[in-house]
Length: 72
Image (cartoon, rainbow, N blue to C red; front, side):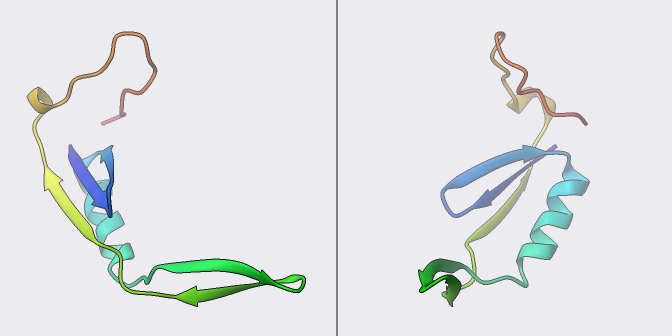
């Protein structure tokens, strides 16, 4: 399993998926959209802050009343 951090948001996913997500997002830049008239215009920014951590099953705690378990 892995945790992919994008900025201040963390996402738990299978390790292979996490590696692919980071590979794909390394080529991206942040952007912010805003309407100019009736057209959405996107202003680019900097590259996203990315982090990948490979973790073990013992590091994951699922609440008992949720469907938030991740398929491995």
